[in-house]
Length: 353
Length: 79
Image (cartoon, rainbow over all chains, first blue to last red):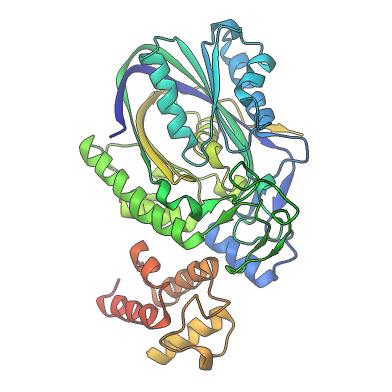
């Protein structure tokens, strides 16, 4: 069982970056009738989201977030020991984008830098990696970068995904220290259901061909090629409201956590209807479940820290905040983390042109 | 009540109520896809003042008979 307790780690510094350009779900997407657009926005609460232009990658957004964070904190680049980058939209198939980011961020060559191919659970899996490097590897500072430009994976007329998936990048600095509270993280995996959220072709299993790039009507009513992101919406909904809720419930019971003794539940920003069902099942009042989905959409691995950065940068909040985090999605992979954020440093969200 | 449920269900999916039978399912009704399903569930919650469990929403995606029975049960129990 991948549930681990990490002591003494401070992870209270987080920054986010988004593309400057946005998509308006009501006025754009003219391929879809206006009546449907209105209903989808009412259901998901995604009124708009940020979309990166060609050439702007998840790494650029994470770079902007990291640059802002480190400058604001006054952290020297040579004091970073590791860069962990969680994304499903890397710059290249080879090498790990984290290596490219090491150079761009002017971190020393003594860092360990690698990518984690995880989407919506990427922040939780990334936290697990970062904490393991700090506690198991004895490192002092890990820069955790999580971000995705999912808009680049979607066919522009696939209504199953284009109303929800946006782009964003984040940076979190984790430091070994003498923090009094524990960080507890649990990660789960069920690869038996990977085909409910995946891109069938374009990798080594089914290489790119003219046929795999051909856009066509699909049996589920969507329109896309085999090289675009496919989502079985109902299976993902089912997974989220059953498996994820069960893991969260068991975790909360084991860690003696409840809606009463937690200040915030930061959920992956999947869509409002689904998240609202999850929060209600766990008996969290709305004011304890921050959302950014209305204006950033579902930003994959960035959505949890982007929501944290928004929450703490727009509302001055000193002191301690006991938080529960949960990410869930491609893999299928899902996870939960509990931590105490103290005197959070979160600069305003950066816009990247 | 059954007619009211069928009427609203058909209206939301923009099909004639005559097209809706107990065996109607996402497999044989093109307009009934996952997004439309959640839109329909949310509309039923609002129309009848229900707060359906997410498990109900999943189960209701099986066929119209299941959909109608769950709505009826939840209305009877006041949830």
